[in-house]
Amino acid sequence: FIHSYKDLPFAVYQIQTKFRDEPREKSGLLRGREFRMKDLYSFHENAKDRDRYYEVMRKAYHRIFQRIGLDVIETQASGGTFSDLSLEFQVPLETGEDTIFVCSKCKFGINKEITEDTKCPRCKRQTEAKKAIEVGNIFPLKDKYSQDFHLSYRDKKGEERLVAAGCYGLGTSRVMGTLAELFNDAKGLMWPSSTAPFLVHLVALPGVEAQAQK
Picture (tube, one colour):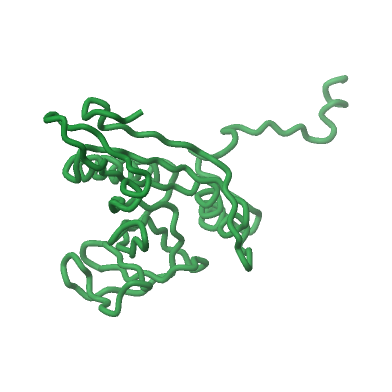
C-alpha cells in the first residue's frame, strides 16, 4: 500500500484476540494466556511527522482513559527491541504487578525496571513508589522492521527512503480487569456508566404476577 510519499502518512489498527506462553497465568483478565488487544501502527515520511502523530495519539489515549474512568499516570519505560523508550499508561492500584516511581509535583512516572535513579526524569524531584497496572503503551519504532521488511517509499525527488513508524497499544481486556479491580464493593462490581453493559436493569420481584391479577 505504501510506494510514494503521497501514500503517507498512513495508519491502521485492529482489535484482536492474542495468545502468549504465560508460564503462570493469574489475576483473571490482567494476566492470562488469551487476551484482547487494540494495536495501531502509523507510517510516516520521517521521524518528525511520526513524532507529531505520536503526540496526537498520546492525547487521544488520555481522553479514552478519562472517559472510561481510569486516572492514568504517564510512565517512562524501556522500549526493549522496539524502541529506546516507550510511554506506558499506568493505573495506581495495590493489586498491580508493576512498580513505578511517581513524581509528587508533575505526576510523571518512571518504571522501576529501567532505572536506578528514582528522581523524576522531567523535573528532578523526588518520587514515591507505587504499585500499578499498565493499560496501554505507545512508542516510536526503530528502523529494525523497516529494514527487515524493506518498507520504503519514494520521496519527492524520487529517492528511496525508509518509512518511519510508530506503535500504539491498548489492552482492552486488561482495561476491563483494571476497572473490576478499581470499581467494586462488598456486593460486587460497580461499573462506570461508560463501560456498563446497560444503564438501567429492570428487576421482576417475586409476587408481582399475583398483584397484577388482583
